[in-house]
Image (tube, rainbow, N blue to C red; front, side):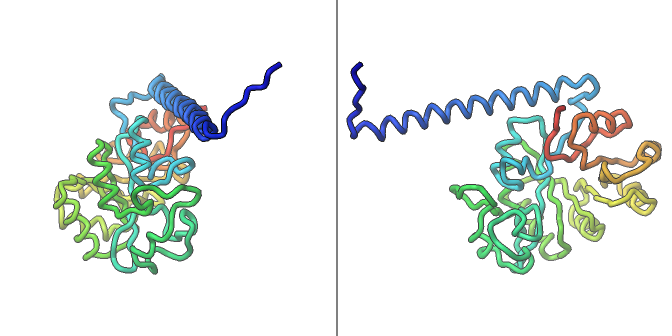
Amino acid sequence: MRKLKVEKKYIPLIIMAVACVVMAVFCGIKAVDDIKYNEKLISSSLIDTANTFLIADGGNGTEIPKNTKFAVDDLMTKSFSAIKIDARLTKDKKWVSLQSEDISTVTDGKGNVKDINYYDLLNHNIKNFRPQEFPVIELVESTAKYAYENSIFPVIFFHDYSKSAVKNLLGKLSNDGTRVLYFASDDIRVLEYIRKLNSDASLLYYVSEINDEALEKCKSDGNMTLCFDAEREKKISVKIEKMTSENISFMCHGAEALSDIEKLYKLGVRHFITDTVAVE
């Protein structure tokens, strides 16, 4: 049997060809997975997707860096309407899109966002992610603008309280044409200040527990929505009934399995903030 001989000069071309085939197969598998994901979600016998608002909690962080343009690109293939962007304030008062205050949890660096200047943050990349053509750690206005331009509504969650910094960011978003009308925080002071700056803004008030004070805040402000933790709330059916009867807007976060979302949907929840919708 004659052995097939390959000239050395053709070896790099053969390797490139094999790599292209492997990449094509990988992309094909991912495309099929995305199609299956959508089909299973839409095929829920209970949920009316036309009346359900899904907000991605930063994006699918297990495969793609949260709070980045890559996450927005991924969401465009799924059934999400919006993305929650975690806004954290650097030492030099710039808002960056990062999941955690401790940068070691999401990047190859160490320290807290508040103690590091923005341009020093750019020395670090998200863990296990290759450097790209633009910084992985992004300014909030950059992430928000990219989401808006690709029909994914940005919901900006302020983790820090600074009147001047909040005002500065809202001004930048307005000046570049990004119509961000959704802002969130677990600090009522931030939301009340945003309301002074923008009477039309839709505010999401994150609470660790649904209590009378939080309910009264949302009841007095027709554009403020109460956002509760689906995993922590007990007797949620009674609380949802109360919010519904008093015309208080509400949504939840923390429900990631389709079965959990369906249970909450039965109780009247129509808006969900979640990284993914896991289908068993």
